[in-house]
Each structure stands twice: as C-alpha cells, then as structure tokens.
Length: 291
Image: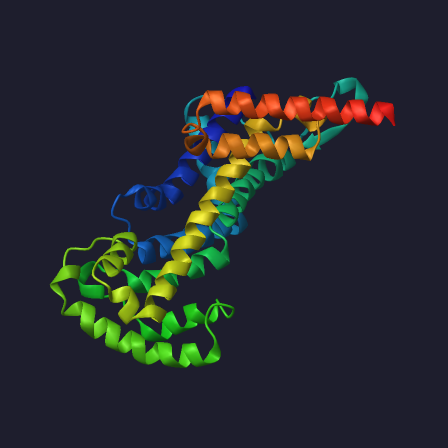
C-alpha cells in the first residue's frame, strides 16, 4: 500500500499548491498590491476550509481512479491497519479511512491553515489594509479618510480625542495638497513617501498625518524584529544553553539578532570589557570569601 500512499500525498500536494499559488506569486511580487494580497489571503483560507469540509469524496475518487488506471492496489478504507510505530503484536489498529482522512488529509490542511493564521492574523491584516490607504501609487487612488480615522482610533495613546477631530480636516487638506505636488508624483511606496515628507518639510505642516504614517511603519519594523528573534531561538536556544539560564540566553539573542550593530564594535574593546568584568567578579568573590 506504500504506492497508494505516495499517490495520495502527491495528489494532495498538487491540490494544495494549486490553491495557494496565486497568493504565493502575489506576495513575491516586488511591487505588491497590499489590498489584493489581503483579499487573496481570505480567499485561500476559505478555499482550504471548504476543501477540508466538502472535498474529501471528490479527492479520494481522483486518487482511486488514477491508481486503478495504473495498476496500483487501492486499500479498502474500512479495513484495519496497525498504528504507525506500533507492532502488530500490540494489537492497536486504525482504519485506512482514519489514516488517510484524519492523519493525512485533514492534518495537512490544518497545518497550512494554522500557518496562515500565524503569519496573517486578523489584526495585522486589518492594519495593512488601513495603511494601504496611504499608498502613493496612482495619485493616492486608495486614499480613504474614514479608514484612516479608524486607523488613528487603533492608537488611542498617540491620538487624543481632540487630535482625532483635527485629523479629519488635516487629512482632507493633506490629500488635496500632495495630489497637486510634483514632488510626490514618482513616489512608489509608503517608506519613500514618509522620507519625502521630512525632506520638504510637510511633516511639520501636517504633523498629525505624519504621525499616523509613522506609527504603522514603526510597528511593522518591530514585528519583523520579533519574528527574527523567534527564528533565531531555534539556533541559539540549544539544550546546553537551556541549562544556563534566561539571562545568558538573552545576551546571546541580542548579539545574534543585531549582528550588524555588534560587527561595528572593535574586538579590542570587547576584550577589555570582558577583562574588566572578570577582574570585578574575582574581587567580588574574594570579598565574599573574606566575609
């Protein structure tokens, strides 16, 4: 039955890769359309859920038809099979249906769905859609004052009630101004747009608008730093370091994640710092012994 399982897995991979192909291509594009990408994320989530709930019979029929046409034995889904990793002598069995339907079909779809939820949580998706209203392409074609006011509401500690009232008029003046300003005609993304605002002084003319642009940019950078930190944990957090305590691990994490910063520090300065620390520890140990 190994050949059947190989065909089953290959067919499942083909179907799932087909469902996620457009989203993968959209996310890899250099000139990303955030709104379209976010819509594709929701479409893929819905398709995966629909496939999980209603696609089993059709999918199983495709696999069975291929196997029969190529002289590959097809197992009876009601027959028992030993649990993987268990000896037949232990007498623990499951049906082929459970193995293929639950342990492979549903499990793989669940893993992909969970990965999408982890990478594209609802809060981040909403934030990206709101930030996309500042997209400078096509003369700010996606600009929407009401959505941007909602974005400001997500930062109550940064925008007071009075400032949010002032923001509506400032946004209206701002969009009229930048759409008629040649300095912004060839700006391609929000980061460059924020830099240009600083360069020509519009950050002081429209301080609330600039603050609204600045906060999401800072959040996205901070989120990327957190993701790098968790990725680095798989490398730094070894069994040995687990026994050394969190403080030592934190020190290692800082050096690993911010390696570009630490690369600018001269080795001699590091050695002198370590030597001073060693002398301090020795003196501290000696004083405790005398006491």
